Length: 72
Image (cartoon, rainbow, N blue to C red; front, side, top):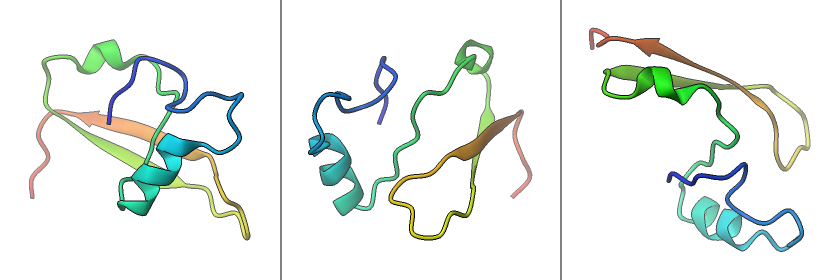
């Protein structure tokens, strides 16, 4: 899912309807990525490495990309 905003739901809506629907469907959400212009038109692999936080409902990831095709 791609959206041109910081988050898929409004920060003023505590029910987070889009988050709820997507997560219940097994779709992971990665928000607030920056400097994506360097990837336009280029093959890349995206990595989202979660920070382990016991009991957390949401958490920060370390996101990075490798430009170019990776061998399978």
